[in-house]
Length: 287
Picture 1 (tube, rainbow, N blue to C red):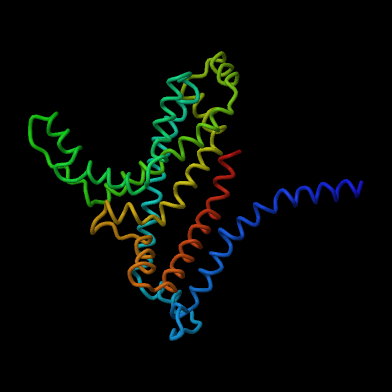
Picture 2: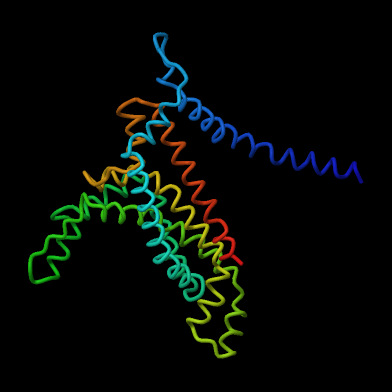
């Protein structure tokens, strides 16, 4: 018996080793390097680099109120985009899973995953063309309405939200669709035969059973949106300064890698705390 267990253990270790090696090389080593940089006074590059260990980078976050306000602004942006994606994506997933069949479903799936086939910068600049003054959207609205109207959506927080929703909406649709597909249709038919109304079936059967996929999609959206910087920088203009753009500036413009690394780890810690605090609610929702 012990010999069989040891063989199973070795077989499992052999199968899991490539995955753990990939996680170590692609995630843990870069995170360890970033953590090391966050405690330095300057980048240790070149023979003339004058650096020492310090906690000033973390202290700067608490002493400078701008960083905290931008972090809160990014968290609100993440919550806004997540809520909009859930409200838009779950009904789409429900229709795909329980209403549409055959070739129509395949065509809609193609439209949903189409954004993944294009570069993110292409998507963002496409929205810039649509939302700018005298852009596609404004010209279309003025063509329909009998009077002239100026939307003024470009370089606003609304433009940032639109760009982010377009980029991350497929995540919640796909995860919710997989959860909805796993629901046995006989449960829905049984509820209908008992006289349950559509809203009752949705609230008492479909939504609780599909909650794991819905929550997975919400987490996949919230975490990257909080640290996003491309959409705010291109679509937000002077309103596009968020926590992610400040971190990106530290690495690319200011070349202050230690401060950028410290701000990144603070963001990681805040996101982990938010997920930990919400885990009891999420666990209760799943049950």
